[in-house]
Length: 413
Ligand SMILES: *Cc1c(COP(=O)(O)O)cnc(C)c1O
Image (cartoon, helix red, strand yellow):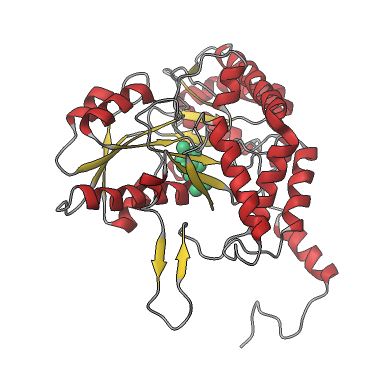
């Protein structure tokens, strides 16, 4: 057999060269040309994150008895984030590999909680606004549950009355986002919580994006709707640390109001020849490096550091929004609360504009409904604003664009 697996080993020099060459076609996130995927605040934070990750490079968070340090660091992270979410001492949680796993665990735990209280539901239902992340459907698919997506209101926030109307005997959970990924608006969690309490439903808040940003933006004085444990009806919250926590990947957290809910998350198994096996998360072996990175970055930044970053992000956002609204024909959709903005046009095909931005070396993120180009802003984007806006303006002003149609192949997440 011949092919990619070489018969003999390779030297580091050769490996280094091959790896460097392999990324030649990658987009340049360091200069702010990628509007999502990479959450970079500054090089110093990245260095702290890397150093901490490498210190715990080999440990495994599955082995908490062998490595009490990693269990204790994880608990520190959980307590720090619980405090940011205004939770009391009863709030419990675990670190996971990402928002997808956090949401998976919320659904799994709610399912098993409901099984005990309301036996006889064949396929438990979850109500989410249509803007909720696909992770809800992915989890429901694995867990034999059903997601009902309810059309959002004209302001892109969850339609609470519409959601209430859709509740059936099989509904066990209702959810909202803080903020939603497509439009960056925080759903009216307080109102959803009233419905949840009235109907005795589990309320999950997906704060994967906003959990480590919204509290600081609010503290700076911006108007930010409440979404956290200060709202009594909130049962669980997902928060990604590898997004606005600026931790290394993979790092997210899932929180529960108290152990009465959390107790349904654990998986234990004893019917095998080895010792009893028990985990809180979906993953077995877990990277302790990510835990150490999250711990280190949070300790390094403290509240003052996150406030400074939040201020930088809101400043980037202000400059970008002003620039976009200053270009005739373009408009920002809705009133984004935090760092995600989407803009479109009523007079031209905005995706065709996106195709041309792409040709100029800008990685383009899009919404389909309504058609938009979207940005998830980071401090690293500060350096791109002027050149981004001047490319955008030139493309929009080119009269030909008005008649151009977009390349539908370019639309993928
Ligand atoms: C990113 C994101 C998720 C999923 O998180 P992963 O870390 O990609 O698994 C879930 N919800 C929202 C709102 C997100 O932005």
